[in-house]
Amino acid sequence: MSDTSTPLTRSAKTSEHTLVLSDQSLRYTASAEWQTLFEQEKPVAEMFHVAYLVSEQEAAQRPLTFVFNGGPGAASAYLHMGALGPKRILFGENGSLPKPPVRLVDNLESWLRFTDLVFIDPIGTGFSRSLPPEKDEKGGDKASEKSGPVSGEADKDDKPKEAKFWEVERDLKALGEFIQRFLSRRKRWLSPIFIAGESYGGFRVAKLAKKLQQEFGVGLSGAILISPALEFNLLDGNSDYTLTSWATLLPSFAAAAAHHGRAQWAGATGDLAAHRAAAEQFARQTLIPLLAMGDAVPAAEREAVYQQLAGLVGLPLSLVERQAGRIGLEVFARELLRDQQRIVGLYDASITAIDPFPDRITYEGIDPTLDGLDRLFTGAINSHLRDTLGVETDLTYHLLNLETFNAWKFDLKGAFKQGFIGAVDDLRVGMTLNPYMQVYITHGFFDLVTPYFASNHLADLMKLNPEIRPNLTLRHYQGGHMFYTWDDSRQQWFADMQAFYRKAIG
Image (tube, rainbow, N blue to C red; front, side, top):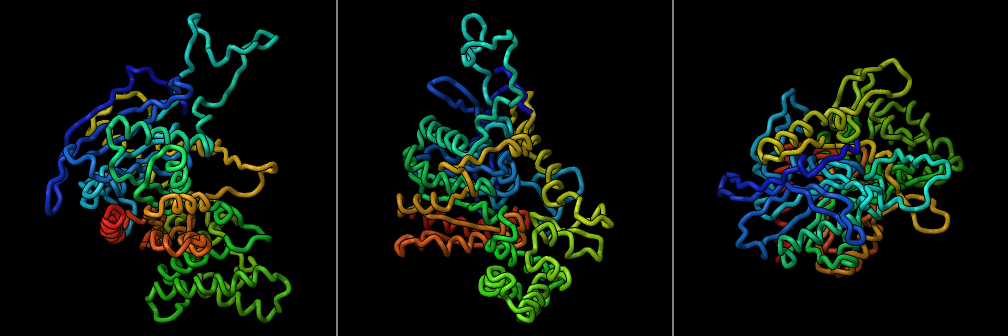
């Protein structure tokens, strides 16, 4: 996956376009190009990006938003072609996957209406690549001028050359350097600056809220975290000895069960908000104490809790008892509609698919809400970049580079390097460094991978000073990880973000 290229295989393009909206036409410049990254003044990588800039005459006053996705290993195509850019994929009703071929339409909810946009592909994703090591005059690799092997055989390193960028701090440094250099090249240091990231990209945003301001001198007007992964102990910490991660999943289970008509409604039938609220209260006040006490809970009391839990999430009581109240996302996805031989999506549990292996003990199928999207976004971004924007390159566009994902290093500070990495502390510091920065955290209710209640729970634990607590907004929508594939949710989010930007720069 670490394919190389020469300058002849890369051709940056700048073109003029118009986005026709209901009340106006936006003329914008699209620049698709590579920006060089340096180490000790030596070029080490080229980061591909697409910048959409409206009205150059007002550039200094117009907001500028840097956008990236997550993975780690994902290119920015998801937000680019799904929600924010001038073109978007046409999904079916409520985010359902359309039949091939993919269709692109003008995006009437593009954020270009209120901000310029720069979509960044981290190294190893999209068209972003490391550069070959600089050669000395004899054609040797300067990076390997140390004493060679006694045997005379060259050292062989099977790692892709991008691998040094595939760890938390180096990745953040690359993004910081890119933003700093972009602001200089485009003379945009005095623009209101925003950053927006989805999933692990939300983790990046939380980290950069501190790092950009503290280490790169970039003041932020706003930070937008979309379906973020903030503290990994809430995402991958499920065990017999943990508590909170089981509870933060529960409201999303309850929302999905109610959506599919499997829940025993808490309150009026059809009132999803009331049902979610009941699940949130149950998770904190009933489930966590039960899990904390373990076998010390009397059998009758434990049975009553299991019955309530089974009703909220639409699973058989026998299964809840067998799991001892600890319901994992894959168990829920397999079991909720098992009698119909269907599974629900992990990234959007409102979407279902046929279970390819209904007779097997454990779930072994694919996730329809992640794997099913690859054909849509791969087709859309390649068509848009190569045909509409005119990018010329022999490189393969890596939408989701699993090599990057599997090789990612979550290095931890400290002597023991134990535990899970998190980003909430960085976000807290960033908000205190700049008490004017607005922060917006958003999720889809049916997302089981980065559940909305995890962010709600963390926000309640941040101990924000009353002076800056109003700077943090949490707002969630119908849908899953990419809730913006739902028309109603995308339109509501668009309106909310217009108000958010006005507040942040007002």
